[in-house]
Image (cartoon, rainbow, N blue to C red):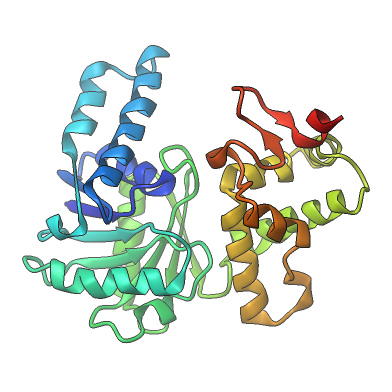
Length: 293
C-alpha cells in the first residue's frame, strides 16, 4: 500500500511515521505546500526515531527502514497513492481545497481512498462538491503512540470504505472506533469542553495553574492536567474545536473561554510556540503565573 499524508506538521509527521512503520505500507509520501516544510516534517521523524535508538527501544536498521519509505515533496508527487490522509490545519475551506486538488493529482489509482484527520469538522461537508467520498480517520497525538483511531462516516461515505479504513487501522496496530458524524465526534466532544472549563476556572481565580492541573490529576487520576494537556494539543486547536462545537450546536455550554481566545490571539499556543499556560522556553515546564510572581 502507498500512502500520501498531506500536511507535515506535528500530526502529519506522526501519522507518516505510523504508516511507514507498518509492514503492509511500501511507501509514504509526506507532502506539504512547499518541499522544505515536508522535509522539516521528515526531520521530526528522524529525531523521534533517534531518541528511540538512544534508549535502546529500536535498532538503527529498523529506523532506517522506516525513514527509507518516506518520500517528501509537494502534493503533486502522490500520483499513485492508495490512500490519502489529509492532516492540515483545522479549517474547512483549507481541507476542502486540498481534496479538490488531490482529485487531479491521483491519476494512476482511481480507487484511492480519501481520508481526513479532522478532529471536529463535518465529513459530509468536507466531501460536498467532490467527486470522491471522504472518510474520517482521526489519529491522536502522538500518532505513533496513541492506540485510538476514530473512524467517521459522512452521509455519503460507502460502508466498504469505512470497513477498509478500520482494517488499515488494525494493521497499524491501532484500535478503530467507529463513531457517527457529530461535532467533535466522541473524544473531543468530551475532552475539549473540559479543557475549556479548566481555563475558565483558572481565569476566575478559583485556583492557580498548578492547582487546577494537580486537582484533576490527583482527584480524577488523569495522567496530565487539563491546562497542560491544552498546551500539548495546541490552544489554537482547542479554540478551533470549541468554535465548531459552539457554531454547530448553538449551545452556550460550548462557548470558548475569553482567556482562551486572548491567548490564541497573542500566539501563546502551548508547547509548539514555547509558551501557553506553561513556559517551555528554557527547557523546563514552569507555570506562567508562577514565573510572574
